[in-house]
Length: 240
Ligand SMILES: [Zn+2]
Ligand SMILES: [Zn+2]
Image (cartoon, rainbow, N blue to C red; front, side):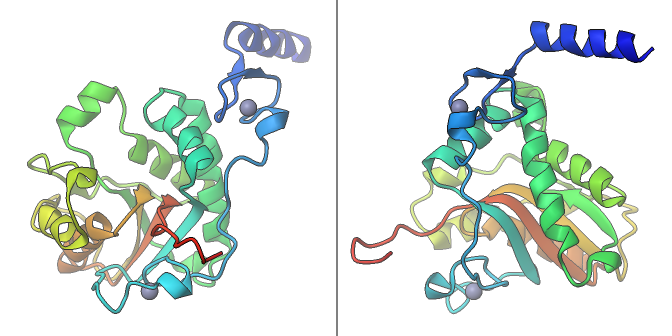
């Protein structure tokens, strides 16, 4: 039986070889080829737990966030975005497991790890999911739920499509774009629970904040936002 399994595994690897998430080359390694193993840029600097930005860029003075905390794994530099996009847009679903695994590992270090109640995801509009063929945020959240032994529940929906955030001119517009655009599904049982709210990339935090607001109005006690990537504000030349 073991021989048969090994034969099947080898045949699958031959038919569907792993491709490096960063450069796309075929690799015998799981997610990155040996030249790209350091491509994803882990967040290692101290960040503000409320807005997720390095302390010198803390945006809490200007923005109000309905989530209580945000946890993110990677800085969205070019190589990390390229690697993530091969999952998000390129259909490399097994590559998503790299990101969900890293996110779950981060959460296991959280002091309240055992008090997490439920995992949900920021929803995409159904037309986006149909076009892409999958909801990448839901894929991440479900993988994480499995790793953390928590229940995944789709708690939110997006009745109307929101304008693409990157087409907006400024932060105020981004917050305005998503205001009132998300709703909690009826009969969602989240009263007094700590909800992990998963998204793929955090830019301003406007979408996460709006979703957290709705979850709190529906009874959630605490909302912890979790993203794979965070976009840091552009640094000036004289900054490190
Ligand atoms: Zn590579
Ligand atoms: Zn802050």
